[in-house]
Amino acid sequence: MGSLLASIEQVIKGKTEAVEFAIVTLLARGHLLIEDVPGVGKTTLAYALAKSFDCTFHRIQFTSDLLPSDLMGVSVYNQRNGQFEFRKGPLFANVVLADEINRTTPKTQSALLEAMSEGNVSVEDQTYSLPQPFVVIATQNPVEHHGTYPLPESQLDRFLMRIRMGYPAEEDEKEILRSGISFEFADSLLPVISGEEILEAQEAVDNVRVDESLLDYLMEIVKRTRNCEYLELGVSPRGALALYRSAQAFALLRERDYCVPDDIKQLAVPVISHRVVVSSKYSSPLQVSEEAEHIVRELVAEIEVPV
Image (cartoon, rainbow, N blue to C red; front, side):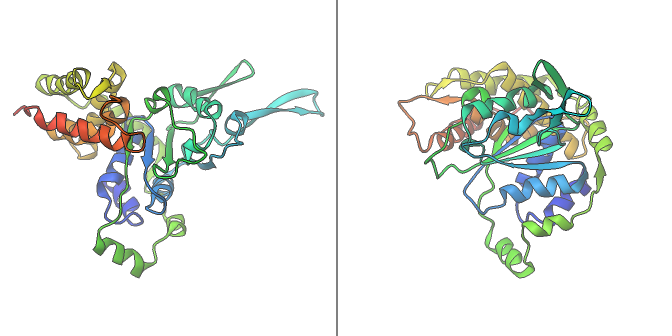
């Protein structure tokens, strides 16, 4: 996995943590939501990941008039044989970039649910399997809310992680300016790993050992979110499982066959902050995601780390 990380970092400068989280999402068979302002490299990260391993890639620009059939595909009548034939949509790819996912209607957003959770799509009583590995990387702008449809909790829960890119450090930004790195630069990346190797790595994640004390540590984090006065809704069992598997994938990325406490601690905010609901008494509509991250970060900091 080191070669995959190095390949992406040729394009994404100074954002090692964000790149690692993207790879962890892929290894854990999850999906990634990148929430940040325009121009910080959200789309470029997804494209660089797709170009760095041998796979198919589709970018979907989500708009208010996008229909579910525009994602999944449609059946077209073939006059030669007198039958309807299914034409696959852009969801049939290994890496799918859902750009500005909150700009499309809930009906189209929900069309992603089956694909993201089961790796299948159903069209006219027929179920079609999506290619494997399969990962959805969605982006959204947290600042511009005009004409958007906020993702409901059920849709947010399908994303393994929600991360932010953030602005690059000054030295990294200078390097970007000097080298002229852009979205087009990612197109020159060559695959450094095959799809079969990704599938093998996903299988290897299951064999990463998690000590009983670390499992107790993880469950204490989950329990604190459920009993926190600042949260109306804590982490569900699905969220706990997501944190568990993410920690296993993070350990594998670090070339270990066992987890350490930092694996769980570092992943807690990106994995579970979008799965909790901040109490209306302590939140403002425009900053609820930041407040959720702050609350989770404070809860984790209060818990004693196992030795």
